[in-house]
Length: 293
Image (cartoon, rainbow, N blue to C red; front, side, top):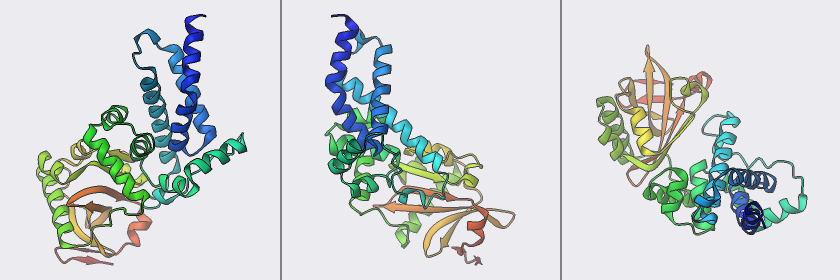
C-alpha cells in the first residue's frame, strides 16, 4: 500500500467526525461536504510526515475553512447591522435531501436558527467546545485568539443560544462604561480602552460606517482597542431611542451612531450605523442636553 493510500484511509476514518463538525458550523450538509473535501485537498498537498496528530490537524483545518465560509457569508448579506444576526440560516438547496434531513434532526432546526445569530468566531467556539468538547487552548489556536478569549466567545454564544443575550445599554452604570470607553479613546489611552472591552468584543459596521475605515466585522479586544485608540474626539455620549450610546458628529450633524451591548461592566458588542436614512429617522439626545429628533 502506497503512502498516499494510507493517508487516504486515515482521512476516511476521520471523515464522518469532520463532516459532523462542519455541518454544525455551517448548517448545511452540502456545504459541510465541500469543507471536508477541501480539508482533504489541503492534506494531500501537505507533508503528512510532519503531522503528529492527524485528527487534531484535520479538525483545525476544517474549522478554519468553516470560519472563512461563515465570515464570507456574513459579509455577503450586506444588511443593516442590527438586522443581520437575526436572519435565519441560508441553507443551500440540498443535493441530498436525506442528508440534510439527518443534519437537521441531529442538531435541531431551532438550534440551527439560533446558531446563525452568532458571529463566526462565536459559532466556531460554541460548536467545538459545547458540541465536541474541544479544549479552549485548541480552540484559541484555531481562532488565533487566547484560550481566555475563546472561553469568552463560547460563553457569549451559549447565552445567545439560550436566549440570554446581554441587553442594550440602558442604565447609569452602562453610561459610565461608555463614557470611560470614549474618554480613553479620545485620550489615546489604549489600556483604558481595553479595560472596558470584553475579550471577545465584536464591532459590526454597516456599509456607510465601514467607509470611515472600520472593517464590516472586527472581533477581539486588541483589534477593537487599536482601531478606536485616539479616534473619539468628535464622539459624544447620547441617549438613542431609549438606550445609551454615542454619536460621532461632523459639522453639527451625526455621521455614525454607536449602539453598545454591555454585560457585567464590559462592552460585548458595538454596532456602528452610518446609513443616512436610518440616521435621519433616529431620535437622540446628547447627554450634555442638546437634542435632535
